[in-house]
Every structure is written in structure tokens, then in C-alpha cells.
Length: 348
Image (cartoon, rainbow, N blue to C red):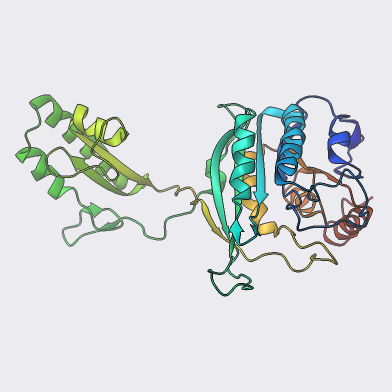
């Protein structure tokens, strides 16, 4: 990419992101992480600029502008790439608008595939109204272009705090004390067919062997007639219910390599680079999971609303390249200063 030629690690561009994006080639970006200006809640230093997102008179105009911008983002994003989109909500005339989901649904209607709706719990919140609860969260949507995309779940797994152990008889048991003895008896007492019982015993023994080898930390087994699926008994709704009906059992395992994070992230907002009239500064911790899980080595990470440069700075610190676009020269200058301070090895 010409912007990052000759070993350059980052680029910060001042301009209207839609116009700038149209100068990019197709499928050159590995990942996009961004937070557009919220409607009616942010004002640039160039207040009269007609290209400014967020100052539209009607929300429909704002939503349509974002659809057009992210259509261009989709063009420059690789087919294996991801878009992480942070949006907050707003009240108007006493009514919560549901802005994040209105935008998300519009993007889905435009062809994006939504993989996750992450709730960013900011751990603190404002309280200006006296007749409703405090605001303390925003949405982070994970979108992809295709059903097959880059995802490194192992890079973000949470390691189990409990390990398998040994009981008084020297038998290796799971982290929560499951030995399998109860399940062996239930299989024997069940109405499973002989073939189903044999398959269940083999699966149970295999799981216990995995615990001995340290591959599995814990497990639970459901056997037809003894346990129910967690979510529903309907085979049309629950894959587990279908498995229980057709096979007579299923086993849920917690692997020793850990579990994936949940879709609720408890992260305090950024304060260090919360400058002047910029109120929507990404905390770098919010960028850790998106970058680790959806960016292959030496990725190009784009933020088309880069503000004070959180995404580009985080990309550099984690061994990637970054491109930031912002309409405000003031924010671009702040982002440049930030990178010089935080990532001096890459500063030019």
C-alpha cells in the first residue's frame, strides 16, 4: 500500500473519510476498529464543514451516511477481515432512541454479517435525569464480510483458575470434583439402547482420559432421561436437545487451554487523551481483544474516525500497522503527538 510504503508503519490523514476511502484500493485492510461521532453529540473544530458526521438534522440522514461510509469500508476490507464498531445511544425528547441497533440493522441490511454485540460496561456513568437509571454501557458490534474470516480464539482465551485434582483414592477428577462415577451409573440405569450405551461409555471414558492428560479441566454430561438441555427441550430450537434425542447423550467440556471471553467487557473509559471537545476516546484495553483475535500478523488496521489516535497507537504497540482518518486537523495533530510520545520508535 502506497501510504505505508518503504517500511512506514502508520499514516494519519486529515480529511473526509468517505472521500479518502475512495482513493484506497480494494481489499487492502485487515481490520477496521472505529467509533463514529455520535449523532448530535460531537462537534469538530471546523464547525461549518458539510462533511461532518453527527450534525445531520435527522437521525435517518446520519444512519444513511454511516451506511455509505461502511459500504466503502467493506470494499477496502479484505474478505477475511473484521469491522469492530463502537456506538453509544442517546435520549431525545425523553425517549431512548436505540441508535446503535438502528445503525447495526441498517448495516446488516446492507450485507454485513453481525457476529457479536459486545456490551462495553464502562464501570461508571453519568446521572443527569432523575426518572431513569444511569447510563453505563455502550455497544461494540463485530461485523464481517463473509462467513469465513480470520479469527484467532486461542490468542484471547481465559485460562482456567482451577485445575484437575486427585481424590482420596488417587483417581484424577475434574477441577470441580467430577469423577464420572455418577454418569457411569446413570448410563447403566438409562433406557438408552445398547448401542447408545456403548457410545456414551466410550465418550465418557475418552473425556476422563483427556482429564488425566491435562487436555480437559472440567465437564458435564447429559444423559437422556436424567438431564435436560440447558436452554430448551425443542429439537427445532436447541442443538443440544436434538443431540440428546438422537444420540441419547452429550458432553460439555471445559478445555485446559481456556474459554473465550464473554460479550460483556468491564473497561473504564480513557482519560489520558480525552482532549478538549473529544469525548469519545477509546481506552486501549477495549482494542486488545479485537486486535488479538481478528488481526493476523503484521495487519493493517484502519480507523476511519481516528480522533486522538487510540486505534493506530494500539496497532503499533501490538506489532501491526495503522491508518487513521479524521476530518479534524486538531485531532490529527493530537494523534501525531500521542504516537510520538507513546510509540517513539515508529514516529516520523
